[in-house]
Image (cartoon, rainbow, N blue to C red; front, top):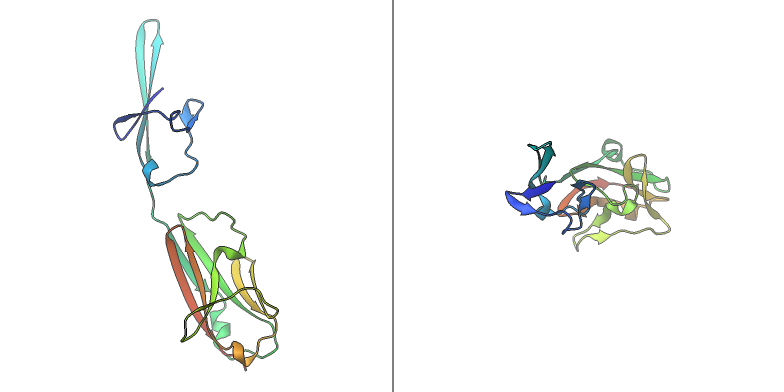
Length: 169
């Protein structure tokens, strides 16, 4: 099999991509996009047959949509001392996560006038992934926990965020 990429001779073996009579692109990047053509010449008793296979590999732009699953419930004042979860849903298009189950796929912030404060697990707050959402969980919220919280995704050149404001009384 002889290969071309974008009408230029191309050798998958020289790029470490050959597999059997084809190739596998393991760590795809923008330079791998293009039109690949594999040409096979078969000699059957002096008669040469040619078969070509064309494969177009496109670089698709990724996108992310974030939404607060339980925003309606959070619009009313929340009871101090009663566990509270903010649930952020992540919808990905053409973005693959290294570990889809990791709570670190999103960051949680408390939005303040002095800048956004990155949140991490504490005695009162835990960040978990459960039931398909990324959750910011308050074990025993207090009125000081009232405010605006941001769920943010920023990976692979794609970023998005969504905010929700809660009141704890």
